[in-house]
Amino acid sequence: MSMQGNQENPLCTGATVIPAALDLCSQVLDVGESLVMPGIVDSHVHVNEPGRTDWEGFWTATRSAASGGVTTIVDMPLNSIPPTTTLQNFRTKLEAASGKCFVDTTFWGGVVPGNQSELRPMIRAGIPGFKCFMIHSGVEEFPHVSESDLHAAMAQLRGTGSVLLFHAETELEDQRIENEDPCEYSAFLNSRPDSMEVEAIQTVSQLCLQYQVQCHIVHLSSAKALDIVKAARKAGAPLTVETTHHYLTLSAEHIPPGATLFKCCPPIRTQDNQEKLWSALRDGHIDLVVSDHSPCTADLKKLETGDFMKAWGGISSLQFGLPLFWTSARKRGFSIPEVVKFLCQKPAELCRLGNKKGSFLPGFDADIVIWDPEKEFEVTEACIHHKNKLTPYLGCRLYGEVFATLVRGKIVYLKGKFSPNPLGELLLAQ
Image 1 (cartoon, rainbow, N blue to C red):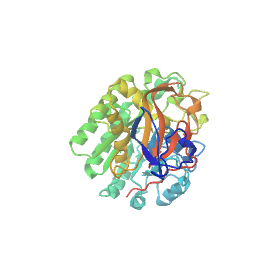
Image 2: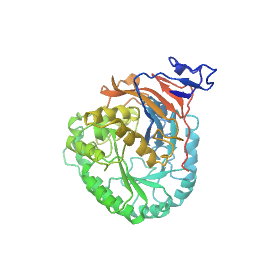
Image 3: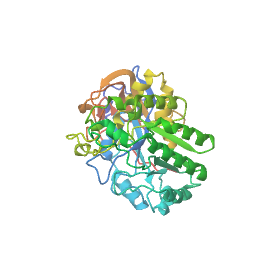
Image 4: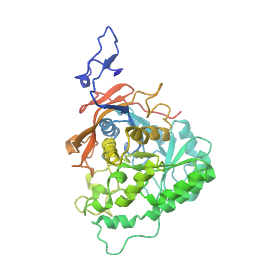
């Protein structure tokens, strides 16, 4: 295959270089029997810079992405300080990311109470869409919205082509059962029942129908909400849904006591629920699969006490999305074109990059992942490239080792090594 490249690039060891007389700016990389596929677009990543770079940052997050075949990430608006909820804060975010990204990066904005006047200026500045929380977000600087806030925001977004993303859980009366052991995963699971998602998604569906603004449910965990999604779509709601690698891979029955690395919100549910998510994916009721990479420092995971109720809720998996998905999908008969659809094409369309990312088509960016679907490997701490090496997948054996990642035709990752300098660009929606 031909690509742009510098013949002095140390990552190109082993590549067959075209003689200069034939082509001065290209080289050939012999990938043998490896699979060549469009680069993955992960539209749900918490980078946390600026403000919480001890949790993660653009340098480490995008290197981790590159090593996993991800060629574009979309940064979430919260967990950084300031959050991306105003035009000025967006400019601060762009400045923080400049010169640090190994893969292409774009940014979601945020909807919080009272910021509706900021939304259209942020759209004009290149924000493709916005995220909101219908329940406490976990950080004070990104408060959750009321239904009246949503009406105000959607009135601003109507007709803009933007998308509103929902963390779709709503607060119900305290679900905890008295005297439950907080070190047992069941205590946390019982505190975030399916009904919290079902109620929230019912509200989202009604708003979506009323305003005809594209709405997107992030990280769906409960299959019980799918009937609401189907009915809303049938009625004409422009509603899309994602789920995550952890909901498709992990199940509540197999989470050990005190294993707070498995905590996320909404929670990981039962094996039976997981199989229903896989069926919904196959049937087209779930549109795409993302990482929801949500890292933190070790102390926030309460590893010493194992208290699920007090631990930070978030799972780090940006680097391992492709093998996680493929390891489970191959057993269920999913094909490589379906992998491309769920991990590349549909996420690109969501963040308004469907005209340049996620497919091998004329005029698209040469974003490529080269990987071996039959190669099995073990997740070890030594191979993890995100900042804090905390993940529930440590020790797991997965299929689908990434050999190389190219962004716009340039090698950013090859056989365990990275490009000397970040080659990613900051992307703005047109």
